[in-house]
Image 1 (cartoon, rainbow, N blue to C red):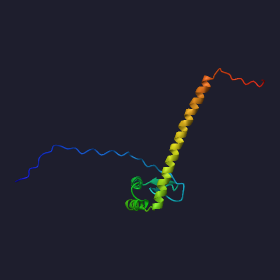
Image 2: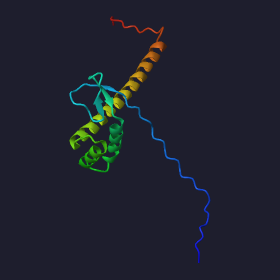
Image 3: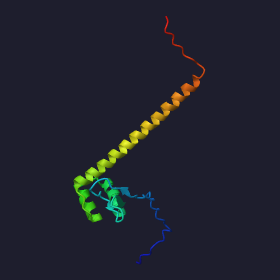
Image 4: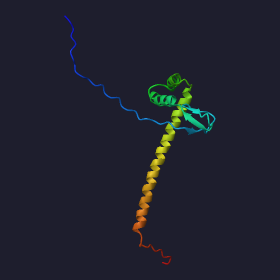
Length: 139
């Protein structure tokens, strides 16, 4: 008995979802320590140039931290990037970024509230043109 392969037709693999492309920009150097994912610019020691491989691995590490310990993720990140980062350093980096993002979100919300308040005040002032409020001191 021979096995005959039946044709199952043409099957397309689903196209992979496109990741959003991140453009890493140089940042100013504000401390003596060079952060993970950056290197000192050869021409200007006050500028830090991004290392794409390390920064992309760091983004992936942020997802891994949800499932694994900081120590395990830091060891993985050090192996992948060939640059050492401690579990404490990784934790500080991730927490600092979360704090910055949270602060930025809060300030954006405040800005929206202030814009709404300013618009309301302007509307009230425009409606009051010609209306005069008198405050007599004599009773």
